[in-house]
Image (cartoon, rainbow, N blue to C red; front, side):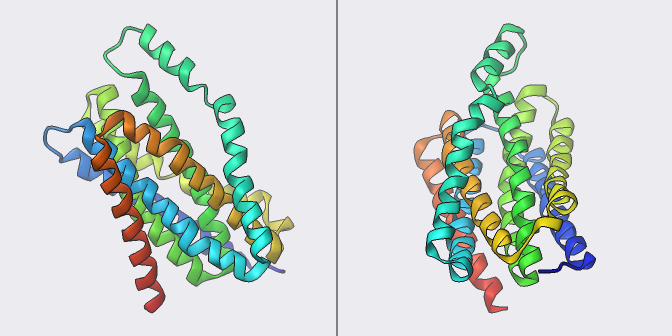
Amino acid sequence: MGFESHHALTALFLSFLAGMVTGLGGLIAHFTKRPKYKYVGFALGVSAGGIIGVALVEVLPETIAVIGSYKAKMALIIGMVFPFLFSDIVIKRTAIEKKVSNLGLKLSGRDVVMAIDIILHKIPEGLLIFFAAIISLEIGVVIAVTIALHNIAVGFSLSMSIFYITQDQKRAFLYSLFSGLIEPIGALFAAVLLIPFLTKSILYLGLSLISGTMVYISLGELIPIAHSYGEERSILVGIIMGMSLMIMSIMLLHLL
């Protein structure tokens, strides 16, 4: 299966646009008066629900249709299990929280850890958009738009977290804006290193695998972090709202 250069450039452009929308969430947080932790919990719930909706409603059915139910579902499972086994090795959350606390600064270790988690989860998002756009421009646009909507909530949460760390709203906004650049970096990684090895089957397997990783990030990281910030009911409302918005957005985009 051959790939033309404009396919890769389009995929990179879509991931860049989706990533930059993170700044919109940061802008909303910037103009939020009297920011409260519960807002972060709700926004993270919206973010997690949106990603789960994309993975299970759009990506999984698409991959099942091409590579079969067994391969698609196994790749999804592996995508969830692998980061579960290794995330605590890569990101030593407890050690980070303890070190931050020992510094005696007026900031919370959980805010630092949340900022790290949110920023790092943008790498698989960039890969997801890239693979989807290489497979089909239509699928790529659908995935990019839905992730862009999800990134509004991500940008809000990240900006609020950085604000609690720095007490500087301008810096918090700029961090959320520039964190969006991590998304196209993930796509660029795929373009430079993976394109020579990509076939149709590998693309769809990769799509399902990364979707599993995104589901893990939502269930294993974003939602637990949300519970450390917000009220249980507001987080649940956020999850339902996020999933509903993503599903309706996908339906609308397919009708256009």
